[in-house]
Amino acid sequence: MTARDTWTVDRLHHALPHSASRQQLLADVNLTPIDELPAILDRWAAAAETLQAAAHRIETARVTEKAYGRLSESVAAEDRTADVLRDAGPREQRGQGAA
Image 1 (cartoon, one colour):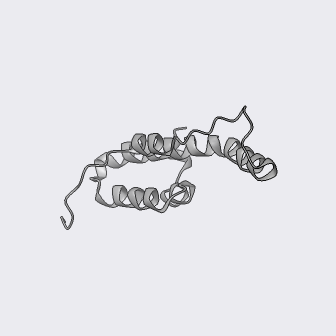
Image 2 (cartoon, rainbow, N blue to C red):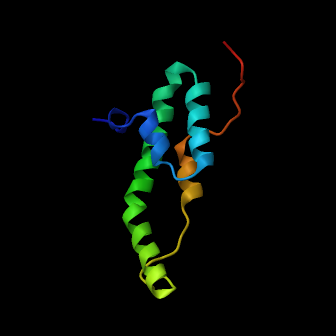
């Protein structure tokens, strides 16, 4: 089973943490030629899975910071959002309005 088999565009949309990434997903889906969609969706699914895999670590860091006013030394505060979004798919401008 591939990542594409377990995701829907709606599930991907809800799995992304920022409105900009959700908007980019929808733009990619709407503006990508049909034969290129599987590859685009596979990249978005991989990005969503990476974010989900980090969810427990993120929540642990949030709870620790709230309880102690700082992150524990074992938790490296590293924002990888840009890396995940960069890997999600191409950001090239596609022509709009084409039929």
